[in-house]
Image (cartoon, rainbow over all chains, first blue to last red; front, side, top):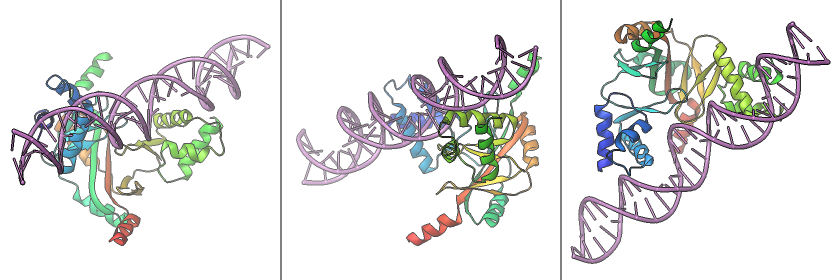
Length: 128
Length: 128
DNA sequence: TACACTATTTATAAAGATTACTATGTAAGA
DNA sequence: TCTTACATAGTAATCTTTATAAATAGTGTA
């Protein structure tokens, strides 16, 4: 557990902002001026393998990383990219249905809702 | 509607393989030896804007494109990347729940199931 | 203490997907 | 015919992520 590794994990735990690898890199470069981007990626990979962190890909942009606390889903703002957690009963049923229909051995599923966050809604309203 | 554009759309309609931009490029380069990759991307963007085509990003790999016919969900093989459609009643409820919990104006949602396809299952079984 | 062994970091190169840009071509309309 | 708008081709550039090699630090053992 190196200082860099600890700082990256700490950042993920304390910040609930679903940061990108670059966000983390920039946020910590004040404390670790010599830290490499590769270090961020290496550690994120380690955290992912251990199951501490979840990686999320949206569209063409960079991946975002989320410290795994409890099962929850995400809603994403199309305008500003903000990610917000929300709770909903986990959809186990769809996994078994999909498995039966396709013959796949199911491992997991991924669900995201897209829309416009309150801040961007009011901003868009003010424009007109 | 140029010949290239028509060919790309035709390929998306007839092939149900959820191709990547490069798949399309390679498949059509016999008929259009001078066609540019940029043309494929340009047209896919146009199709997306019109709503004819849906773009899907999985992990770090290339985007896959799906001609929109009816509402359906996808199941994706972790081993070979194959994408298979399956039908399931559309989850409208989760959209309204998410909207109420977060204050977002909801536009759509995205749901995918991940696992191992039958072919890769038997291949993995033979290995042991 | 000295020595190896291992894992991590840094730095940089490289890969891969996508976009940007410019010049060329082409088709429709006045 | 002239013009205008748009699509294409070709290529350069961007951006994210991974691979690689050298440097570094930590740990345990003799």
